[in-house]
Structure formats: structure tokens, C-alpha cells
Image (cartoon, rainbow, N blue to C red; front, side, top):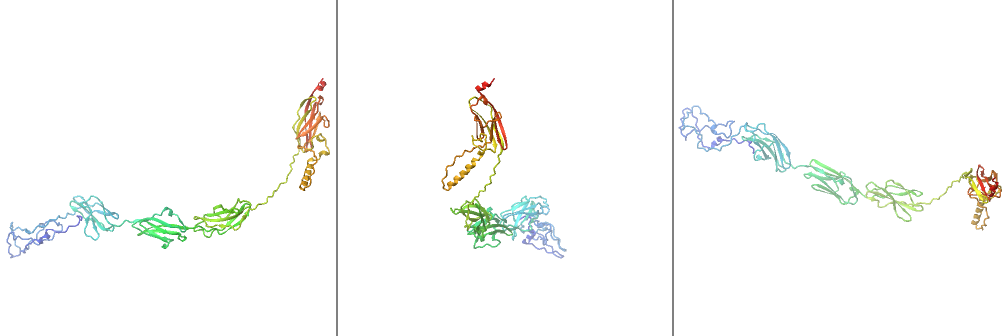
Length: 571
């Protein structure tokens, strides 16, 4: 208890009844005077009420006695007649007088609760306006529980602090607090909280911690187990509830176990109807937290409804199919197309995860027949069975027709020209000598070496021997195919592999063709004049002239023959 609580008002006056007193008779006229002496000492009149400013510890002797009434006999003076207040009564226990208001501090200001936990409370205040005449010694904090009348000091002695924490409290405690300032004169009036302090358990707002793998759609296959453990926070223990698509859970299929820090949702064998949004709600008084978990239960899709051949051309086949009626409660990843030839019956994949419902299969082998099948595919895999074409695709051989272009003969006609002219030559008398040159020209007159044409003549010998040979060869081949004996071919003059233009040889500008001294021949466009056993007389200028229908050309050279005749004709 603080010193500011009011002490009970009691003093020697209250103890007087315990001391036997002789009541004083009022003195009046004619009343006999009392004898003087200690035994008959007069007793003071009945005690007067205590003065308002008199403290409870002041002695009763300071209270003035009531004066005697009129007519009372005068009291004798002297020691014998001195009034003594109950000398035989025992003296009462002395009490500390109440301090004056100006001596003690005033009440502290702004008593406030700073913090309340589940086991402590912290209060603060400001110093009082008046510290009293003797200064400030400290503060005394007191506690009174609800329903009790006694104030219990929190600290044993005053403390010079303006903030204090009361510890070791229990949840559910409810009490009042007051604080008073003290000094050597005593404790001043206290400052008391208006409302009691209630110690309650600290409330931790609920919070759900969804695992990372459950923040997206949770996929399970039909028949698999679903076991979700969701941790949460909250103090005291919150209320936990689950819903499926906004409705209560089916207790026959789904079981839930709630702990202090987590909740477990369990489905032994998941079915497609278990798919949906599961919402977890954690509620604590007026606070709550929610978390939604999406579960998708899937299975393999059905195969496409039908597959048919649209067209077959060359080494290509066009296919078309319809999507499956049941995709397995999820989207399709595509289709897988396979082919198999009739001979081996082995399936090979052509396309994987192909999204359109039409495709073209190319690079098929000519002469084979093919079957095709199509699977549907989703996250669970390929459909259990495929859709197969009812008909075979036959890759047939196509007839090859060669379209030859007509041959257009090129005109190579050109005037004669010498690619290698004649060269001057010196020879010895009696030794045969040859003069050669090469000519290019078209059209060319055909003939064989040594013929009249070769010697510069013309006539009916210009018949095309090559055409005659071709006709004879065709006739012989026809007879051989019919099984008839093939006669031996008649001798034909050989064809000149290099047809020649008309060539004229001259000496000193005179035609020498027909002279037996000279012989001419040609081979592969090279024309040669041979002079048999020349003599100095055969010296001179020789000329070779080539002629056709487009023009003519000529070359010449000088021949010198040295010998005996040459020396004779030399002067």
C-alpha cells in the first residue's frame, strides 16, 4: 500500500473513554466548592471535536477545555488544584501526524499503459507539478486485483523512474494500477488508471504458407493418391475448414486432419469428379486467411474418331481424321501419325505432337502398299488404341513418256579459208618433193582420194556414197530380223571422213591437174601436192586454190630445185 492512502483518524481523545474519569458537575450559584487535591482533581469537560486542521497524531492536551458555566465556583490556584487529565489512565500509542499538503508531492501526471503482453504490462507517467517542500524521493507503483480491496506495492522501495513494467502475470488477470510520488514528508495523492488492465493471450494473425508446387494446378492421374499438407500460422490455435468448389467436402471420399500448425487433405483414389478448386480457410476470431488449390485429375484420351485416305498421288498420301470425343479431362498435346507397308507390317512414326487434323505423308516407296494409324496424346501419354485407315494406299509406277525435241540442223556453211598456208621449199633434183596446206570450208564436195574429183575433175561421181551405205545397212538388218540369209555386202568405196572443197593446184598460174608428174591427195583437211623426181625446170611458184559455192581462197609458195640442170641454165 502507498503512503498516499488516508490514515484512520484516531488520537488520545478516542482512547479517553478507556480511562475512568470523574464527570465535573456544572458550577452554579449556591453550589459547594470542591476540595483541592490530586484525588479530586477536576476533569476536563467532555472533549471537544477535533479541529479540522489538527492532525491525528496531535496530543489531546492541546485541545482547549470548555470554560465553566456561569455561577460556577472559581477553581483554586496552585499545584494542588491544578487540573490533571486522568493521570491514572495509561497513555495511548503515539501515531505519526499527517503531513501537510504543501510538504508532500502532488499526484503524477498522464499515467498511461505503454504495452500489454500475455505476461507483463508496462506503464509510464510524468512527474507531478509540485514536488513538495522536501523534494522528490521516488515513485511507488501499487496493484489491486479486481474484486480485492487491498493495494499491493509492486516495488519495495520508491524508485526514481517514470516507466515501470509489472512482470510474471498470467493470462486472464484483471487489476488496477496506481502510482504516487513520495518524499521524506510522506506520499502524495496517487494517480489511478480509469480502466482495469486485462492480461490476454497474444493473438497471432492467421497465415497460410502454400508450398511452391501447389501454387499452380496440381495434376494427378485417375486412381492415384492425393495427399496435400498445408502449413499455417496462428495463435491461439485457429479454426480450419475446407471447401470444394464452394461446397462442403464429401467425407466419404475426402478426409482432413487438422493440427496445430498444418492441415492435411487426403484422397485415397482420385477420380475425375475430384477435380476443382479446394479452398482452405484459417479463422481466428475476426481474422481469417484463405488459400485456393486447384487439383486436376486426368487420364489418357480416346483415339481419333476416324481416319480416311483423302488422296494418293505419286509418292504422297493425304490423310484426314476427326478429334476424339474424350480428351481425358485436359487439353491434347497433339497427334502421332504412323505408317506401315504391307510387306513388313512394321510401324514407323511419321509425325509427333502434330496439331492439325490433316496431313500429307511423303517419300513413300513406289510399288508398296501402306496402312496408316493416328494416336491422340495428352499429359498422360498416347491413347491406348489408335484409329487405323480401312483402305491401303497403293503407290503405283507411272509410265515414262519421252518427249524428244525435233533436231534442227545447224548451218555450218562458210567460205574456204586456209588454216595452214604453203611454205617456201628448197629441194634437190631427182628427189620427190611434197607441198602441203590445210583448208576449212563448208559445204564440202565429197569424194575419195585419187578420184577424178580429187584430181580436180567432176561428173557423175558426185553421188553420196554414205547414203547408199545406210540404205544397204537397213536392208540387211531387216533381212536378219526375218531370218533370211544376209548377202555379203558389195565393196563400197570408203567415205572420206573429212569431206573436201574443190582444190586446184597451179604452177606459175597454170593448172597442173592431169599432169602425170604431179600427184595430189588429202587427209583430214590437209591437202598435199607431190612432185615426182623434180628437176631444176620444176622450180617456180606453186599455188593451191580452194573453191566452193560461198567463195574461194588461195595460197602460194616458191620451190627451188638444185641440181645439174640448174647449173647448166645458170649463165
